[in-house]
Length: 324
Image (cartoon, rainbow, N blue to C red; front, side):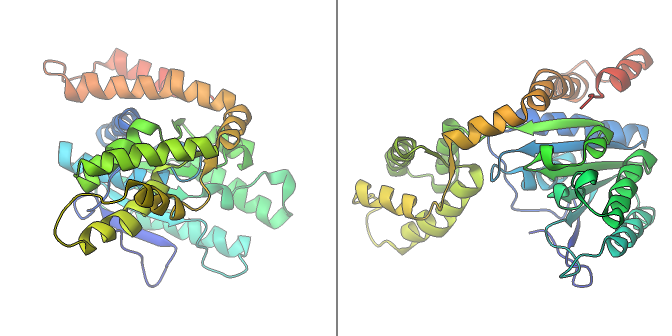
């Protein structure tokens, strides 16, 4: 699992080669789009930035780890991932001046890291709320962060992750080069997670029954919830059984999954999210994700298409950038 520094507990640092035990189901297009952006950074040695957003609990925080690992597995490019947990600040009462110095020092430390890098700010809305809603000291931090995005350190992909893009300062949001939207976890993805993790046909009906019951209650569990109930309930149940591998009481198992689900998203939660972020979602799904996914597939996946000419690179710099 990712390594957290004892000196700076809000910072994790690990290379793609070192990362293990990371999985992200149902977001192949988002991953391939991210691979395309990251590889363009590695080739050109320039800086790009991406805002990753979507409903809570659907796996966005795993994205940079999956990205770094797949960059190594698929292309043998060993990105160094530096992840900043903005909800794990270094002070009990965060001081914007202190945070500014921390971020400045963090950017400075990137120069000492060889090769391409991913700098990720998880829960980025925690440090860059709308400037008109905070005091002058905090506004100074927001403007500094925005300037860092525009300074563009060499050979770095900067990622900001948030559940709430509409709670980020608008000028910071627009400073990100592009955005990648993670939709809510769908039913097919949940079924795939059960199949991949449990590998027992008996659980298929349990999972279907669980999803039917949750939908009846108006709940739509996300990937993070599913991962937790598999790890905390289903797997311990299986490992504690003796003899037969048959699930003995489907109703009991469904109730067990429900009891471990907490309070998942509702249909209203998802509808409100879509309404509040409709323009950003539309731009990401219709433009950014298809463009970078197809860029990756054409350049790196399909045989016979290896290089992109200078005209295409020029088009990439204009078409790939998304006005948000």
